[in-house]
Image (tube, rainbow, N blue to C red; front, side, top):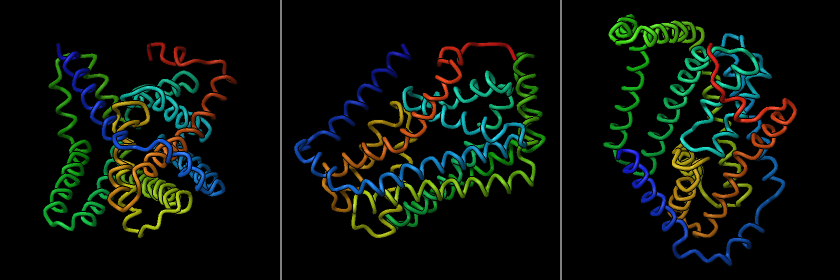
Amino acid sequence: MKKTIMLFLKVIILGALGYYIFHDIDLALLLPALREYSWVWLTVAMLSVVVSDLILALRWRSLSQYSCSLIASFESIVFSVFVNSILPAKLGEVAKLFYLRKLYGVKLSHGFSLMLTERFFDVLVLGILVVISAQIYWENPTVQISGWIVISLIIALFFLIKSRFSYQLIHWFPTASLRRWLVRLHHHFQIVLAKESILVLTFWSVLLWISYLFTTILFFYAVMGLDLTFAQLFIASMVSFVAFSIPLLPAGSGTFQAGMIFILMQYGVSKEEALIGSIVLQIIMILPSTLISLALLQRKELSLKDLMKENNE
């Protein structure tokens, strides 16, 4: 019953998104808008996506205390993006862990702790950027205060995880196997979240989000040729990041287009230009990782089914 209700709600949401995206769209104007793009800058934007993936790999290698090589880290990153582009619910994050276990012997518990840590820092950095963009967009102190409260709660959760109290909580769980797994996970967290590691992780996370901003702002300004202020480009980038991360469909499809159309139309961009821009930007975000992943799978003679087979650690 619960699954039926969730499916029904998902269909309703996707239907509403589809209506919003394609209502009053003149399809004849899509290709002319595309012809105005700078293909030189489009190539540069795509290369900047590869640079972002490389930064992600460097961060993962650092998180793993260099137990994962740069090659292994990069392969798992691009494979994760590839799976996220074909499967919903961010299953690429899980696929990355199976990839590292299958090909490089990384234990799932260790990989899971690394994944949670990097997601925590991404949420924290994105939260700060969203608060800043919301303040610029609405110029409302209430919005800013609400945003900083949410960020403070995230930071408080971080310190809770690092505290001895979190270890004591593990013993409240009912099953011994679950407690053992949580103890291993807690141990990995304490190693990853050491003071020196946090500084390095913060550096890579900030650099990563700068690279994301560079890609989107470059796309809006140089590829699409939008005459927007830096503040408007920044806000449009934030909306694209949030919309892309909503896992209703693979690669944030639907929500990404709706978010881009909404924010760009606020700045005088036509709906057709915003739609074709959202499609091209989404392709830029996933195409490099997809091509690299397909080449890797062919060279290693693997399939998604092979990687997702369950084996005991």
